[in-house]
Image (cartoon, rainbow, N blue to C red; front, side, top):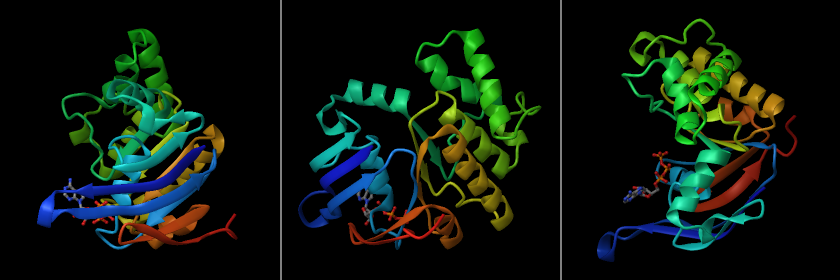
Length: 228
Ligand SMILES: Nc1ncnc2c1ncn2[C@@H]1O[C@H](COP(=O)(O)OP(=O)(O)OP(=O)(O)O)[C@@H](O)[C@H]1O
């Protein structure tokens, strides 16, 4: 469902130019759950951001099914992200002045869903991540693990095909991280959402079906074929 061919990406110019991705080829099957590991600076976040269309590669092609993301203009690319992808970040990226429910409603409101239906779907998504009863709480009134659940609810509320998670458990203690990972596995299995996780945590990687290892802007190895 996601196919990347010859992706390169450099930051900066002249002597400060740095090649963050140096030719990445990759296929991710629909319904897969996959992790990306590698040392700091190896290009994991850059890869996630280019594959998901948050950023553009300098060269190469990225296909999401039949759609060439590299061929879309900025508006169409944002539209594609809004309708087909969800994002989870280490620092949650929730809006502090909005309640959990309002945070989860946002992507629906942005794509034109009527207010009443948005509220109903957001309640269901919060239920799916185990937060029923906490809809009216603000991010400052929730724990780190709960805030990450809100951000996962926001990422899945529009029923995307793909969920991209950049260090989703990076700010959480071991036990909360394991519970979050169980939730991501459950979402992958029950909702058939393809999940891609950038992580430094070997336990998180071990729980996914495939793990890609990056070094210096390249995928240098892969394991996990024998898991599950
Ligand atoms: N906006 C930017 N401008 C300049 N250089 C950047 C930018 N973003 C990333 N880089 C550089 O590109 C390289 C890859 O960064 P990236 O964030 O993809 O690595 P990473 O593997 O995700 O690292 P970490 O595990 O520390 O998050 C690094 O050397 C980084 O300094």
